[in-house]
Length: 311
Image 1 (tube, rainbow, N blue to C red):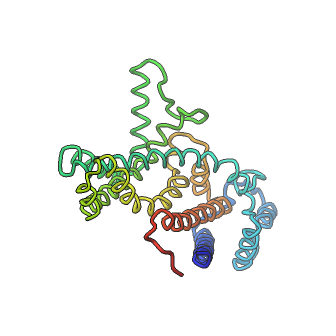
Image 2: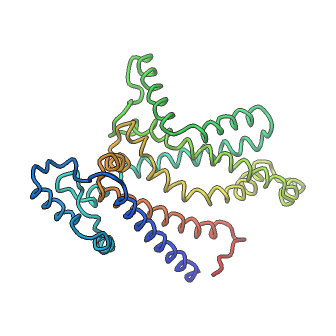
Image 3: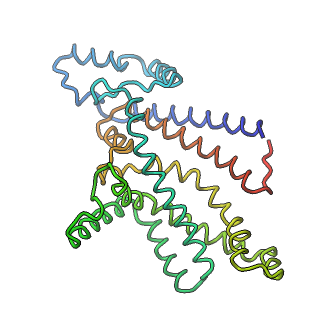
């Protein structure tokens, strides 16, 4: 087990290095001037700015400096936010994205398992057909459409009631989180519903389920102890990457709902060609995703006693 975990961590480190290198090269290949928003009134000021951010050095030396600083946990200073370090941006705004993402994951996981089990129990009947139609919409419709639609629905709801049932945008209270979390979790909920349905149908046809019925076990006990427990394993497999994707992938949702999360700053950094913020947040997101995949691999072996982790 220790050897397997060590190999997974080593492969994760290699993956993070690849993400780091690819991001660095991509940033320097993008056309444009990262200092175009600075008021460089003379060549001397521009040279000073380039020296400050290390842009006056050869690309290979910039890469070595970036990697060495990253190993120290230093992602540098933002190009566009005066004297603000990327580490400070991540530390201050990632908790907002994480809180929103955790709530979205809870909604997506509970909804996905509930609707998936329901569609399997009512296979090829009206509940199954209705839910699967909604699942197709949830998977195929882009997140920004749901975000705009959800915000518009809140505007009409608040206008009809004559008071603010749920805030349309902003951050600060639990009510601010509900609609963005629901919108952010819809795609994952649809994916988990479809996966849970398929897994439940497979489990319901297994011999040990028929044996349990033959022994006279109650339908509730069979569902909870045998069907649900075994059907949830494929869901757990994809839940780790989905957690990372939701927690770090709410760029559009944060932007639409004016949430001061890290995703919003990433979008602004891309628009402003802020090298250090883009590279810092991308490496941070990549490391977080790799960590979640490793944890899910280990958790999967703990949940299913039939799984034996081999080196």
